[in-house]
Length: 284
Image (cartoon, rainbow, N blue to C red; front, top):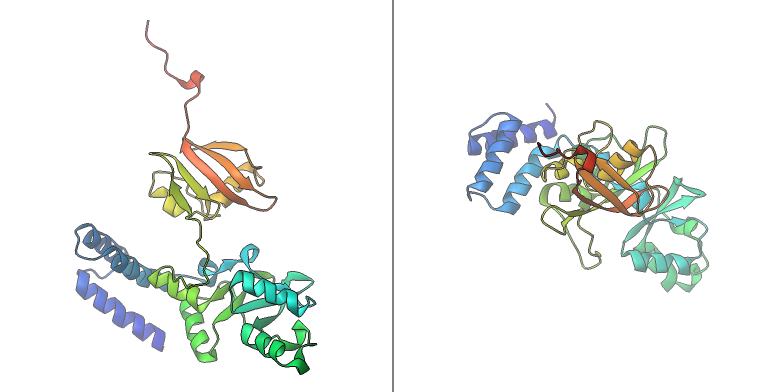
């Protein structure tokens, strides 16, 4: 048995002893019940559930999607690269050639600063100071990737799909957040909540809101093909709906508030009002 399996076995044994259950679903239920009873704090519940979930996660479950990656072309002037890094707040940024599907390097702020400080290197291009990128398949388990990050002393990797195209980007911080929740630093910009109540039964959603989380609100939209509300609506419509377009599904009215040709960014969900023809006629 490998070291990872040994650790999982030990952890499982401790959790089982703590909550008196020996299968994952029962443990999850016991943890949730313990939180409801006030026996564990909300952040403790979240962390325990994150630990249980961690071994089942793949890179594609935790990565930053390709469309949300901040990156620079390999022929961008150094001064423009500096502006991108300052704006994004990242200490490492991918470098691509021609398209984002062709990531050719990773630029570290430290290397960029050395280049700017040393006048002998001021003329160097991005391609001369970037480092070799670390590629991983999007189907790799996050536990295995965490071990590889530690062994390689790296903090960031480019996730590839089955065709070798860029699927996303994942950092060691993303992996840790799967257990402990969001880790914010001084450079993080506030992120819009994926699900925000704006009325008793009205919600503002980002396109990345998970169907699983929406189910907890009574918005049941199960799918084996997609995980987010934006993907679900696009699948049902057969295309990415335009801003202002409305769809009624499972008793809920979804209004697209912001979308482009590729993605739904923001929408509103509210109970659908039954059409007059559906209303029950009074008895005479």
